[in-house]
Image 1 (tube, helix red, strand yellow):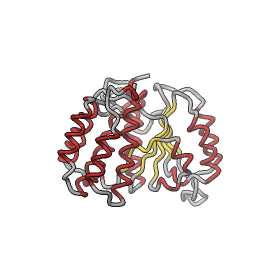
Image 2 (tube, helix red, strand yellow):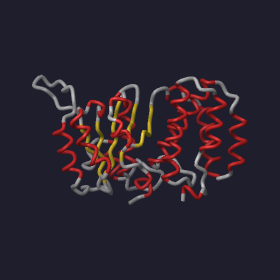
Image 3 (cartoon, one colour):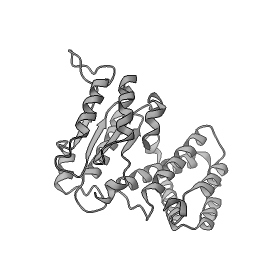
Image 4 (tube, one colour):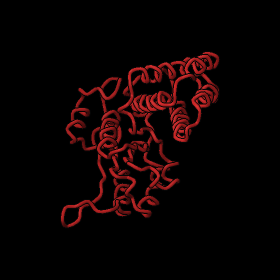
Length: 267
């Protein structure tokens, strides 16, 4: 399996302010997952990328709420839909190295549907990836959320600027270098930014980690486990920033808890 697909988590929650934005990100990640071209993925040129861009790739399947007799989306995704998905997931991919299921309005799965999804998310076929698109991840059961990686939160991404992106890249490069002393110095040099800049920086880190996990951006030598641990740390920082935790505390957390490249715990 190509490296981009090995790094990408088997199940990801993609949260955004609008469903269209979450779906746009899911489609981009799905293209990267099926890409058969050279890195960085998606290459945009191979047969799989061209089919994904045209929304005709047989190994990218979108699950959405069924329609009623008037053509309106029903209120929920049903347990029967998830059972059908589970059966289909056992079938090998048609053309690509993996199959991708995009669940539009995944937060509209009813309770029975979410419970039916648990085993599939916990023990998925090796060749399958799931992208759960939501506007409110809190509507998903904690057991469902625990089996997924929350990779993307589009809320506020439009406010990211070049300075935030550079700061995020500098932080990830420092982590990848594996020098705790250098990371401490970097965090000390940046802990004086204001709260707004800290939120923008944290959003930029989340966006870059998404790109690294999907193979869209070089991973700087960080392995999949490290990227996922950085994602969890990023979400913890986001939670703290939402309750106005001090910026110095955030950078202190990054200095101590960031999984450094080369650490014995991450090999």
